[in-house]
Length: 257
Image (cartoon, rainbow, N blue to C red; front, top):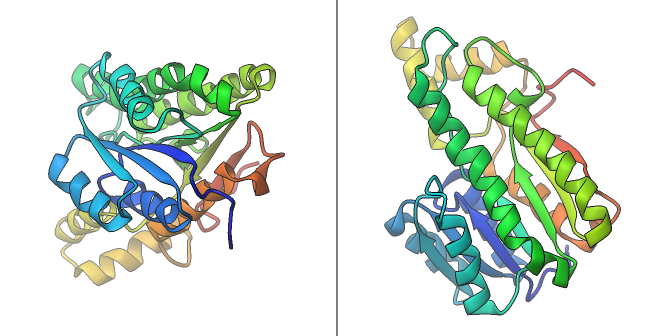
């Protein structure tokens, strides 16, 4: 399906692996021009190589308050404008509130929430000119809290709130803002959780995978590209009436309204 994204300038954070990488590949297949950002320069270069000649990289740590401005300025330098911002960077440490220290909380908010806020703020005037769109990649923990995901759930809830706030502002500036809530997606991070469960419970990784899926009451884990396609849809004119929307891509894991 042609989503009408050919030639659009797309900035993707957290693009070196997992959902970010898959999203970059989906947009590249649609003919978009890409500015890819993450901390790992080598991994970013590999993603850019697979995405073609219209993909550029910006290796930096978005926890640094100055970096988001530099990222957006670099995209403007290369392409002259921005049409889509995908805020995907950020992984938070699992654990309950008694297990996590001050650093874990600060780090979780710094990379995922504050980076998204700063990238959105820096790109806003350029998106206003292009009548562009922002898609925040958040997570189901923001809607369904759990004891062992205290930082992640809190950060995700804040980012969902920010999504709605930006959408309200975007009505006046013709900028669409939406969010995608991935569930349990088959990334390196999920694989580490499965390995940890296998060790803790003295079982094989295959049995641990099945046990985790059963615990979450899903038939299977999602693929990164499935989230990437949802993001690309939200960036396209096919989703022109989606504004302030929060789409769960989670295999039915979220059962709340």
